[in-house]
Image 1: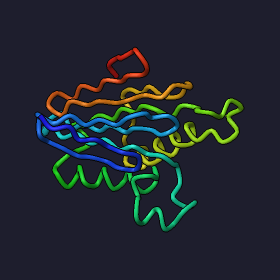
Image 2: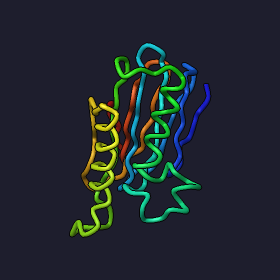
Image 3: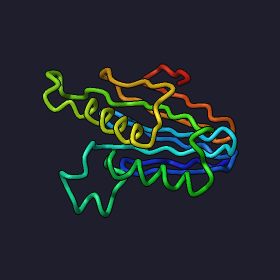
Image 4: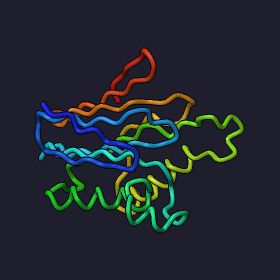
Length: 159
């Protein structure tokens, strides 16, 4: 079994049924999990910001940090490996309001909206989501069967 750790602004794609894909401590960041049920092909990205327009240089060197740059790249990578719209599902986790009690910046909500815009442009939509709130989440996905587990503090649950 191999653990593929997805850091902030990174993504991982795997079809190895022994692999686990994991990202830690999603606060306002959002994990997008895509799974092709026929190929057992999984992808996960850890998006930090909604719009690459705020830093063109960073968007070139670390496109995965941005919903509008990284998510389309991961979707294209999965399509190149054979994933088809008819056999995939999408799940979302994260997008909390962290250290922003007045929701002045509301990065979490802005990330979720930007991600949904990208998904809609690809004619995709989430089948499940655990978003918002004020707690960070860790996401673990089993490539073999597509199981997605979330944890926060002492709690864990399936998405």
